[in-house]
Image 1 (cartoon, helix red, strand yellow):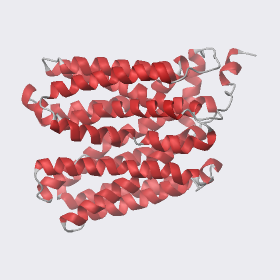
Image 2 (cartoon, rainbow, N blue to C red):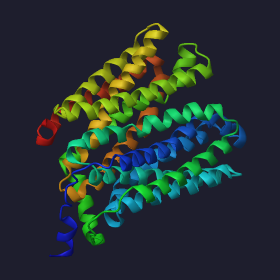
Image 3 (cartoon, rainbow, N blue to C red):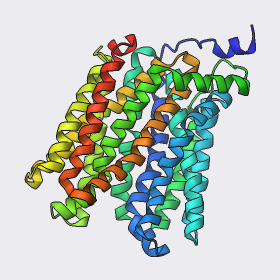
Image 4 (cartoon, one colour):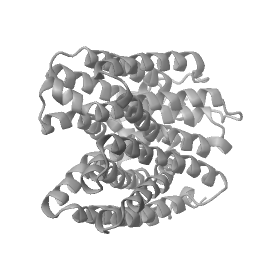
Length: 404
């Protein structure tokens, strides 16, 4: 058998799920997401310490998304080349190094360089972890496990928003994050099993062909675009939620921070619900279509309608909670849509590129609309993104894996 045939040979299916290892993988994702949330909650202190304008400060948040836009497929290639466990461990240690350098930074240039290091670690973790789950979880438990995994982002961000505000000094919080990343790496090393069958490392030429196959395959491409549109919808609201709550609804900054954390955390309910719904045999395209419709209608009402504060807050919770159905379903379905099973990590990398593209586009589109015509104008990019996501979801119905 040739090297390429050996690399493509499917692994023996898992019959018993190691839930302890699943929880460790999910926890490593939460630690990674903390690095996104900590940048948001500590931004005012960073601006004061480094005398930053809004544009420069924005890079502290945006650098993760820009790395994801260009690095998703390369991260998937790295997983196929070096293995999911090794890349996950490497990502956590790189994350810890970046957080440590950030905490000790004496200049904005060094801080930004450290955030690039952190962002690289974050990207490696978020692409490698689903590949770990794919091989550690029994088929009957796969959708539930991916539902749990998809909660890592809102979970980590909500924890960061709540805990970061309670701690004095941003450097202390970032040192704690570095320690948590090291702890997560130790848990992965001890608890997450190695791949039982040893495969040869594929040649770089093979990896390049595999990457191209993934990029031009309709299934992975469609679901990556849907994830990009979901991300645009989600961050269209959450990126500006504290400002919306303070400027438009009159909440204090402290109350706005707590309410924003609750809205972000509501997404977890949808993530977990998706795993349970898919486990019951609901067609995969249905929760994605439902989430697109609800996010679109709720988002339009939030920005456009002159509603009382309590009703807008309720709509924000519905927007985030029901919206959580989409990423969980997309993450669970992406490996099934891969052109070949061994290309699943690259498909997940393409999915992450779509997610980060939405994160980059949303603040620009919504910010431009609000600057031009006020808050009601933000309803337009929300409506367009929701409609496009719904149309692409219907196109995915032609793939058999989306109908079961």
